[in-house]
Image 1 (cartoon, one colour):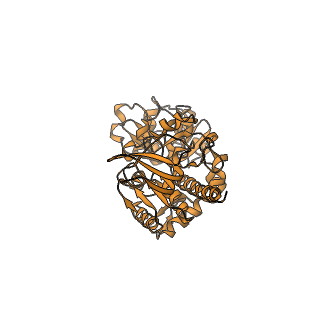
Image 2 (cartoon, helix red, strand yellow):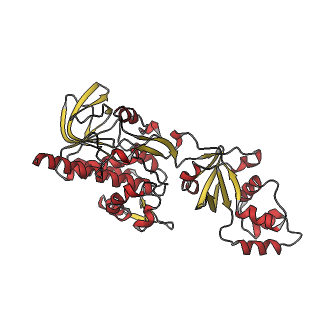
Image 3 (cartoon, one colour):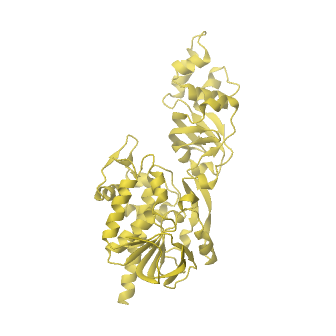
Length: 407
């Protein structure tokens, strides 16, 4: 499967551009349908962002019922048929089919037992090799986007043409440029007159200027809290950083945070307002506020520091304290730069695509993965949708060529 820059024009049935999860899945599906397949990757090695995402534990998917799983995406109507065919159960089966045992954590997140992405990727590349898929490293697609069957790529030895009956673009979003996901594909797509929703940072840290009081708590997690933004809630944890906040509970509210900068934090979601009010009312006169928050409300040092930071001066009356603990205001100042984001929202508009993920104006060209205009939080949703759209596009490209051969 492993090939360097091509020496002369090469001919394939299906040419996939991008060797991330979407591209590799598209290649597998097309190859299984009997197509001669090549994957062109701009970087020296495949799936770099996938490997980086799995460094701290590869979260493959989320064990949820299909309807609940789908609600975490913004492009529900477009993704529903695709995820209905390849959702959490199918992702688990895919991993196990590669010899990777998985387990489901207490929150429903599914991980390989070995946790890392590299064993799964090695097994996957071996399977693709057995299917005859060719991997072309250091091949950067340069367009133009046309219905022609010959496509140009920049390589260390200059521009080379590759010929294919169908082209599948799985070019990623616009974050983590050092790993190959730089969004430069937008130039060729825009030049073809296709609609693109502006790229925005998603699953990214949010900015906040802290007082010196918070410096000892940089890097510390704030656990078991509930965040509310414009009526939408997220329960979990986040991390205090030098520049603001980041983490799962923040990422889950990313779409709302792009519209409003105000988050309300419930530091004690395990306590109802009524119970907390009674606890405060029965507080002993000699019991300091800090001691009360530590012993009775069970707020650790990080939570207490953040609570005091957000509600200075701290109220002393019962109702004021209840509001401070259950709805502390955290005002943010926008997201960190897009290249620090785990993923990006925006991308190629669904209006440009058929139901088969083929470009309406460029027959024979299909698109998949994060370059499409959809957004979801971390927690297995991103990888699942990339795999699912890649599978869909790979099958559709094979069907397209098969139908064309019969006509």
